[in-house]
Length: 457
Image (tube, rainbow, N blue to C red; front, side, top):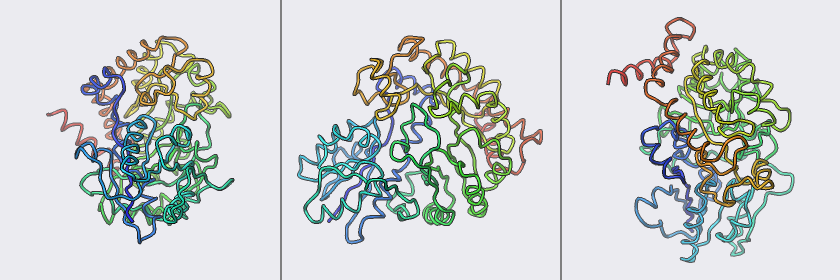
């Protein structure tokens, strides 16, 4: 028996103007391309859960496009996808089914849109895959594959109980960034969020011992890897992460993660993060204005309350030699065209090292999508190919969709202008030389060398 695991990868805007602009303004899509080009941690985990008597192959959708044909010889195919590429995933699933191959679809989009997905699959896996994959394999072996698999009621995955992902299935030459999950979930409930909170309401961490075990498994393939924590919000459990940082200090790895702005409130944690190899944290700042942040976080209006401390938090994190990638969402309710200048000024004044701008995107299954659909503000419902974070798929409140799209392009042109980017980098380096950033921190030294080399070239 042979199973094919196929991950959808790559990013392409539905709007061709955005694709053309992306060639000259790489910062517009840089972060999403990084995310989309990383291996599928979920599929590698399922591979590790598959009994050893079953052969497993891992493929990216890019492989299919490059070779012009589907890999064959499979008895069962499992496909993981995201909304922007779900129609490509459906096409692959339909092609395999036409050949008589059974297909299982899973992931966030399938969890949000199960009835739609069932039209293209032999079976669908709803929710956390670790809880359904063993049943799927057993039922397939027994010839009784069901149409839909849901986790047992009230049960959620214990991260330590899943095996170490099958990193050995990856081509070492292909990836320069490897994913590693240290937690799942988020205590916040942002209206727009289409992350793992759709799968689970609980925030859970993976044990320190298990994270170190996975890091060492990766290092056996990539001796000095760059890791990306596939977490929605690292460092929520401060004591746990301090212990993890202490354990990581001798592992000689560099890494990136996502966190909320409160990480700036703990200097001890920031110090440990730097010593453990943290290079950058991406923080969802979302907006520099109260009108944009109001009611964005549905439980406590948390982000609005944190806004007055945004600039100080950025300075505090970067003073420890960890750069901040500030993420902003364009087209939030309450904000008009003036927000483009507001963001540009905030980035310049705050000293952010990196910046990511996206368009507010209504993903299926989110509170945002439900609200906008109910008020007829979704442009072309079901057009999931527009869920790229760059295409506009909703009607803004204080500008037109066209103004939002053009405003994003214009702001990207200003933020990612080579001279402006260079100035941001050199500001960080100036702080390095002033002594405000620890001189021995590798990221600052790497960027100093890299920035000056690019400028000279």
